[in-house]
Image (cartoon, rainbow, N blue to C red):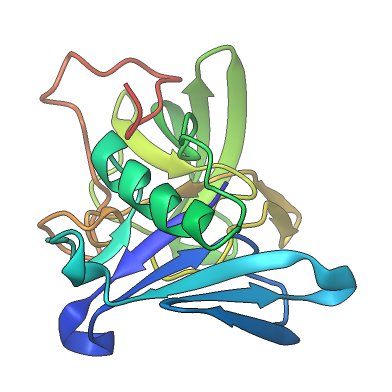
Length: 201
């Protein structure tokens, strides 16, 4: 998995490719407009591609969860021209649609709920303090190991003796309109089924 980030206003004309978000960059190599970043054991952890606007206009303002074929083709052309490893097609964004099977008040946090979720043939338990969640709701979750919109990676964990297998997301975390305090709900869109990839359909 990898993530692309582009925000001309914040970081000017640089396309950031995050491959290993938790790795420390120990070395960089400049290949014209492409800077390859490496961590321990010379492992590739990302790219910074400068002046991407010269070859393609990117309208994104932050994370690009799934690059379209045209953008991927342009990026890989630039990488391969410099003898660098191309990016694979994104077939799994790490974001899944899940159905809320049950909700339970958290014994140690009055603002949070313990949720049981159905996600295809898997069931998950997690905790969320986002508003609007009820039994039967369709939500979007980030799976363990998913690179989030801020570049961090979500890790499943046991917190206060409760499994946090997945992370329920707000509209803000999906770069959609809405409040960061509310869960993003798909209750009004019957085309989504639990277990589906939210971005790769």
